[in-house]
Image (cartoon, rainbow, N blue to C red; front, side):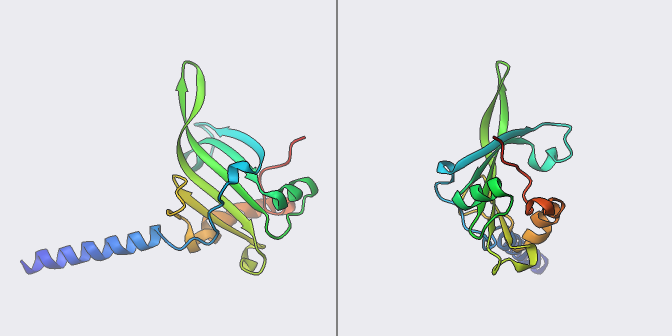
Length: 162
């Protein structure tokens, strides 16, 4: 009986630690009404792409007014926020269509708050749910380390298209 109680307590503790990590405080706020912002581009990452396992699906990229200025000038001002809305893909009758939302990725420029990542903070909201931040304080390792490769573009992968 004692072993059963000890095992149960360990399982409960592990689950609480996992829940705390998964539901960490978001580092960047959920962007209400982001679909009213400027649409920058849409792309599909298909099987065979090196990032398919993590980011396969349809990406819609949105930018607030400050970020739109950054796309046009190459320098993103404070307050710039970029969203990538990642959705799963379904094929119906030879057409690729959006299905479930996988994650809503957000990067926001605040040089005071995120001085260790060139002014950019990052968050991912699982299934696009504002109450489900999945990156939290791991944003440097989980996001910024890839964005370093885009230093010449102020750490932003997507580009403005005329």
